[in-house]
Length: 379
Image 1 (spheres, rainbow, N blue to C red):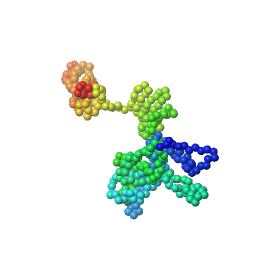
Image 2 (cartoon, rainbow, N blue to C red):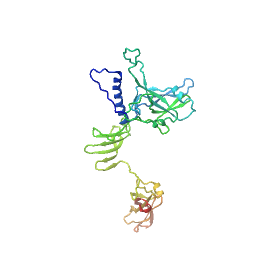
Image 3 (cartoon, one colour):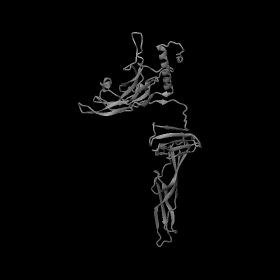
Image 4 (tube, helix red, strand yellow):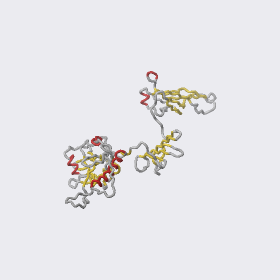
């Protein structure tokens, strides 16, 4: 295959139709290569399946009308497909493909593909010949209904060779729009995904992404919405990487911030997999009957199967006494297999009018160490 040929013209040259067509095709090929090799093919805007409630005039049964919203897609050959207005899906087209199927709850795929058509009022060139050809081609589309399971055909499509121009019909590239449900001869609903396959959306191929403002934001939607996640990479005097959620004001409330000096600040708890030889700690105060917490990142399952070993230390706290002369001593300071604290304290005031020994629940300071169990060979 030769390299792309760029048409050039000179003064006095007689231009043929082939010369002018070559100029147009060169521009189309450049745009197709850009779309194909610098982007991922798919839906760029709109093209969603929408429904409108309807009633069958003969049976009174409720069903829906389904339309494809206006939008744009780029197929896997680099060809652009444009729907300038919403398009209603025809039940007769669906029935022609799938009408003989047995009733099912499974949804059927809906595809979009390119199509060339002659415009309704096509311009025609003035010519001395008897036959005149149209001078315009409408780069149109075709909406197709697939059989159950045909969504797998999308992944089996192979892109054209490098340098190939955008494919013209009858070469067909399927763009999955979604799925429709069919009940008693009518559309009954739509789905975005089925059997693990959903529409593919256009993307970008890039090893470097730069921000002119000094701040780069990554979010899951076109516009900021309160409660939606975002990642913000900021430069300037205090560089940082922030993950957070959008506020109603449009700013990002940080949940995790990584500063330029390496300091990591998080608003919630931190959990992770314990590596061999690591130790996690939990400490605090507990009273009789309380369940000791596990260190953050340790699960009961890890304790039960022996992957993590717990070590606990309890230190009795001096109880509050009714008089300065009251003596106290711990009677029981233990923790059972369920990590429940047992703490009892004995009190005695020798200077009381009627000296008596009493017992009451006590409190402890606890330290819980979680260590990974040793593996064979001491690793």
